[in-house]
Length: 70
Image 1 (cartoon, rainbow, N blue to C red):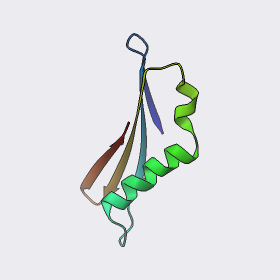
Image 2: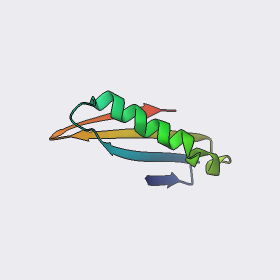
Image 3: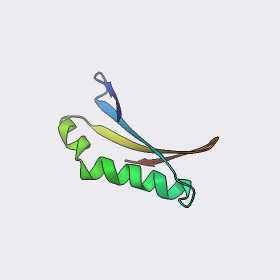
Image 4: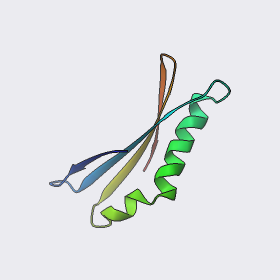
């Protein structure tokens, strides 16, 4: 997981990256990454921040997809 905090505007961005296997779509791998952020409750550590945005990133070969949850 990668974390970026912007203290002046009270924003946090959380990034989780997954590698999609042969049978898995990039969209599914992105959703799994977002699910992992939710299950591990990473965003709960930033209750005092106005905005917490989660990004799920999936890689498969040379392709990449990013999904966002706010």
